[in-house]
Image 1 (cartoon, rainbow, N blue to C red):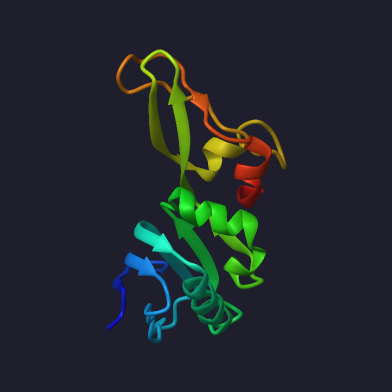
Image 2 (tube, rainbow, N blue to C red; image 1 turned 180 degrees about the vertical axis):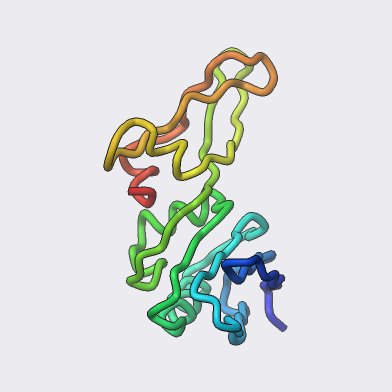
Length: 159
């Protein structure tokens, strides 16, 4: 039995697939009926885990998608962003557009960590070709937080 569930919805311009569960050796993606659409969106918000065998299956899945389809990634949790940054094969040697992703922030005042959902535009506001963590305020004390990582590495998948 597959360890990942796929929920497919259709928008005016694209097919959207939301993943829930684990990207592991048991993950089965099946085939995707694009119904003439040339845009495909993958929503990773509910992905709980990705392991090395799952990564191999994922790469095969990505390589099997039609070359003329534009692919968008949305709501990428830290584990997915890390895979994109560490293993370029994760995007299947394609030009994938990362529309939204989570980034870790730390509030020294509250001693708390928070994963904030950012958009591509949020990360690119620092100028053309640059990606930077935008200022985020703590949801508890409303004071500015610090990005909890190395910006140059973490935001690499956004460029």
